[in-house]
Image 1: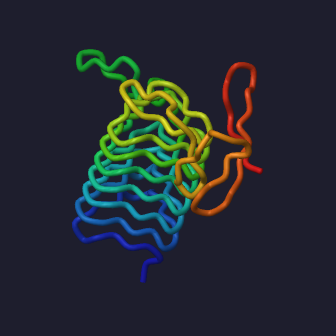
Image 2: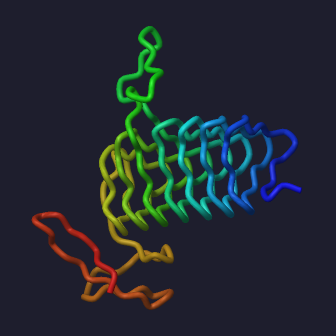
Amino acid sequence: MSEFFVHESSYVDEGAVIGKGTKLWHFSHVMGGAKIGERCNIGQNVFIANKVEIGNNVKIQNNVSIYEGVILEDDVFCGPSMVFTNVKTPRSAFPRNTSDDYAVTRVCRGASIGANATVVCGVTIGQWGFVAAGAVVTKDVPEYALVAGVPARPIGWVCECGTTLNEERQPLTCTSCGQQYLLQDDGGHRRLKKL
């Protein structure tokens, strides 16, 4: 008996590494060079390319393609039909098909990406960052930042539990779990520090 579940309609190519307790649902495809951690839940119609690295406890909703160059750390959430790119200047007549052509996109621990969002390659979404549904991420997202819009811009801060934080007084205190944070100015860039 396998230590992970693959629905009979899905394909896992030889060489792929899939961790214990991971579930791969209907009509999905994992290529041979992919590495997927433990306790991941991979929805319907998901494509995972060669050399993709996925951590533990990652949730990938339906209709998501994860192309070479994408790294998802532990506890990442990818909403339905969100999009990753991996080439900055795609051309059909001039294929980019080597690892050197693919820009690295890193989604750090605990980050969430909403439904139908687009993440342009080469960016980093910081730990516990939150990308709103439909946003287009073209620049790095700071840790704990809530970004929205086209292009995505910071509109607030979120707790590790996902609750939006009120900036009116320091320290910022989560109304759901009580966790506190300090908002700091780091050379013109605002950062949130967990207390």
